[in-house]
Length: 170
Image (tube, one colour):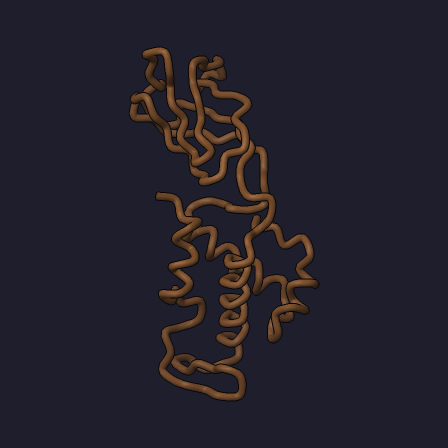
């Protein structure tokens, strides 16, 4: 779901990547590591578990709007406020219904497009996936050079993790 609506443009930008599948796999790995879809902006209804307290954490770090909050039986829940960082607070001395799947939230969230630093990580991972498909196990290829044994394709380097840290759910 990272918005690469123009895979061909990205493929042209990223030397050595000739498949949208490589970019999609790398994007999926980034989303899994961060715990949410990040980009593009989407509207969806999420079913959430609740501990019955005043605060729910939405699986998002960029909430644009919450349009509906209901219980498991689709009865509207009133008296709430939301932060752009994904915290949904019950106000007016009320608590969220307690239990698994007890709260449904319809929201619009996500960045309008993937930021450049995240795109760079995805392109690097896609390159590694492409190389790993044609390189023997335990050998890393960088340009015309090969080194081995390697950490494996799609590895989370310190540099990549420092970028992903900004987009990872707490």
